[in-house]
Length: 139
Image 1 (cartoon, one colour):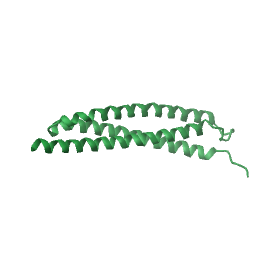
Image 2 (cartoon, one colour):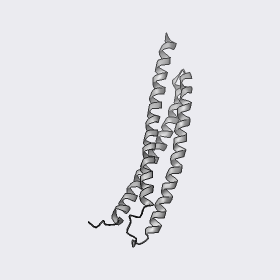
Image 3 (cartoon, one colour):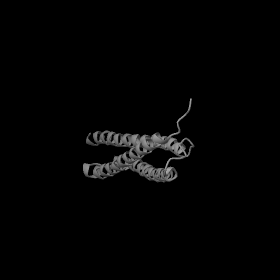
Image 4 (cartoon, helix red, strand yellow):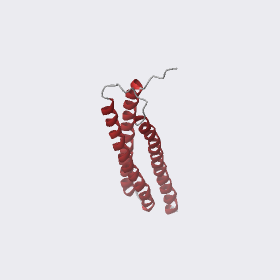
């Protein structure tokens, strides 16, 4: 009786952790779409050509976007590995065993949150800069 009760509880714990990590991946895939838009914006010709330091600023942002893409791949790999490892949690019979999985989960969560916060700051900086120097369309 005791064993049959533990199994469904463990399965629920694993499902919750897996679902949360799946949501992280969804957020990171959305970032991919936003990065594609930003990349296209930075590589377009919609900026006023006589803006001081335009080329340097655009190059800086493009380099930051490239680093962002590379970091996202690392974070996604961490999530994938974690999701694969979560099956081992089903073998746990006590909280001490679960603890390692929870700690790893929280560490990856912190990594994802930090990545998303940094991306939002970069995106905001790029949009604020770009918005001020876009070419004015004449009617």
